[in-house]
Amino acid sequence: MTESKPILMHLFADKIKIVDAIAFRRSNLEDNKGRWVKQPKVHLKYENKDLYIVDKHIMHNFLNILLLERMKYHDYLQLVDEFPLEVMLQEALLEARGGIVKCWVTDNNIEGFSETHIINNEAIGFTLTELSVYLASKGYKVRHAMEDYDFGEGKTTSFTSTFINKGKVISIVAHDRNPIIQSRYINNTVMLISSRVFKGFLSTIEAGELYESIDEFLEELEHIEYLVSHAPDYELVLKNQLCGTEYIRKFRDKNKIEKENYSTFRYYFS
Image 1 (cartoon, helix red, strand yellow):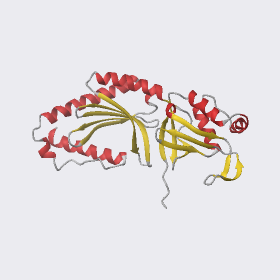
Image 2 (cartoon, rainbow, N blue to C red; image 1 turned 90 degrees about the vertical axis):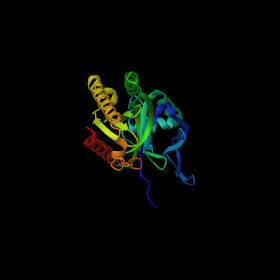
Image 3 (tube, one colour; image 1 turned 45 degrees about the vertical axis):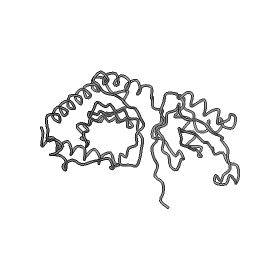
Image 4 (tube, rainbow, N blue to C red; image 1 turned 30 degrees about the vertical axis):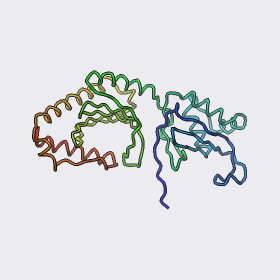
């Protein structure tokens, strides 16, 4: 049997629902038999997905990510003797409202976390709201969603904002501490015009630097649109020259082909 690969999930704390959470369970999870052990049995619901935590170290880390104040491991072990784990977890989720938890999941079991603190979704949201207003003034409509990606280490999800104006597209992928901003032109096929990776969280990027990149992308897209509109043989010339990428999973491979599409376009029409 092929082993399942862990996937990285971004969980909005507001959407995590507790189905059940106890700090003690039977040692055999499959048939709920064996001796009682101080290991959690936590069942969470996230949208339509069931998630489980069955290890006390993972549970301790999860609470620490949600809480503003850290607790030591031995303090966690003492607290679950005195207080219901479900109450502790519910209070922690309330404290983490507006945040995102990034966790590794295998077969519905949470097995680790990619951040030691919660991501401030409100700060990211504020940045994207400002950008949405700015790009709306340029005729762009926005769509926010959690999108699936493969950055070379298996499937992951990242919060993504896509701004669209006819065939002109700007996307912002809030990937870890390296937000990716890209521009594409889509006309039967996809061309990657520009791509830039920033350092740090999206909400901490210097505003002038961010908007300078956005303005450069907008100018490039306007130029591409002009070239396409003044090339009556565009589709005829490039019919067999450009490649589709809809079935390519890996982020790097998809970008490479879409960039080659743009290079081919420039060879004929720039």
